[in-house]
Each structure stands twice: as structure tokens, then as C-alpha cells.
Image (cartoon, rainbow, N blue to C red; front, side, top):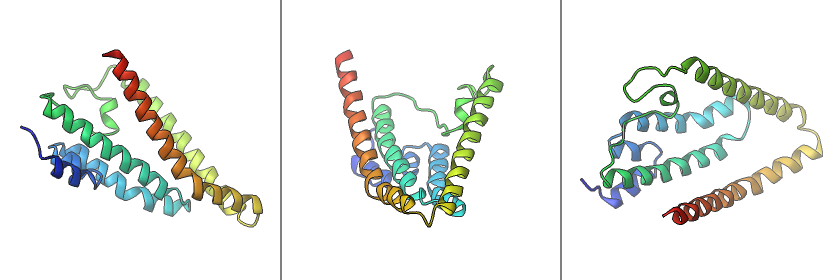
Amino acid sequence: MRRSSLLTFLSALIPGVGYMYLGLMRKGLEALAIYLLIEPVFGIVGLGLGGILKIIFWFYTFIDTFNLANRIDQGEIILDSSFVMDKFVNNNGTTANNFKVSSKKLWNVIGVLFIIVGIMAILDRTLVGLDVYYYVKSFMNKFLVPIILVSFGGYILFKGNKQNFKH
């Protein structure tokens, strides 16, 4: 069954709702929860990265919604999956043989992320009075999002051209 392009577009504007429109409730609810929790979590830590991460996450879910809708319209069966746990669970619902290895890698990544966020929070609180801090923060506020957008656009174009050469 082909879905309405307009309704897909409108639902994709809110992270997670597009997935729910496609019938992927688990993925949609998880995406919506992650999106809503990004800013408060980074606010508690005292970092202003929540807005930037929300933008990046919004772009990802927006584009992924259209990719999944296209695959569904072509007749592919898409299983309702989550963002995190499905990396460690097979399609039949049983845990993968390498769960311990994958779980260890996941916890290592989470540990590194906590360390990075903690260091950034400490630096944010200790460098407040220095001029260098204001220059770095000003640069981040002015240029980080545009650089991410340009990089993401270039990646999409490069990836698309690479796929066109394969066909």
C-alpha cells in the first residue's frame, strides 16, 4: 500500500512520528523519546550542545523516514526495530552469539561519551572567565551547525554518486 507523500512529509517533521506513520511504533516512540530528552539531559550537565544534537537527530530521522517509506513502497518488509538494542538482537528475537562482545563495545562507547561530556562540562565551568573560552564558544555557535550541514550534504551527494556508479 502506497502512503501519502504529504502525510509522510508532515509526520516526518516531528522525529519519531514519521516512523509511527509508517507503522514502526517501537522505533517511533524511541526516536521521539530520545529527541525530547536530548536538551534536558545536556541542560542538566550544563552544556549547550542539546540544540545542535537535536538538529542532527532531527535531520537523521527526517531523512531516514523517507528512506524507509521508499523501501516499504517498493515492497520490502521492514521490521519494527529500535535505535540501540537491535544491534545486539537477531531478527528472530534471540540474543546474538557475540552479545557479550557487542555489549562490552557498547559500554565502552557509553563510557567514552560520559568522559567526553564530563570533561566538556568541567571546561565549561572553569574556562568561563578566559577570552579563549568566549572565542571557542562563539565559533561553535556561529559555524558548527553550518559546517555540519555542509558536511552532511556533501556526504549525501558523495554517497548518492557512489551508488549511481554501482548501477
